[in-house]
Image (cartoon, rainbow, N blue to C red; front, side, top):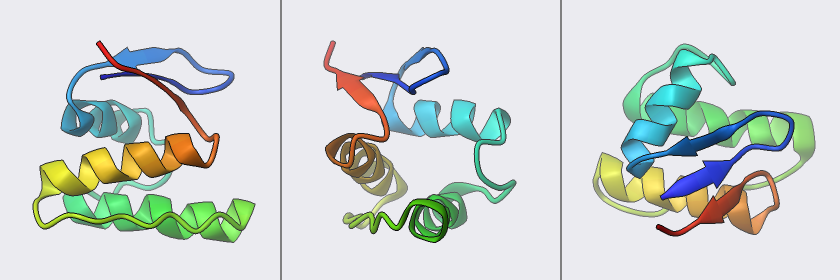
Length: 81
């Protein structure tokens, strides 16, 4: 998967790897794993009024769901590879 974040650059990798790059860049908080996904959801609502509906049972499923929700809400662009 490849995503582009407006006013940033493109990131390529698995959904988990993309979230790791976002975490390393400190786009939201310093939380990790599922806590980081929840932090993104909370900040999206608090700052933008966007409710992200994340589904999945594993971290990998939730990471992909989060990125797809961010794409659906025009927060990022996804290019399938």
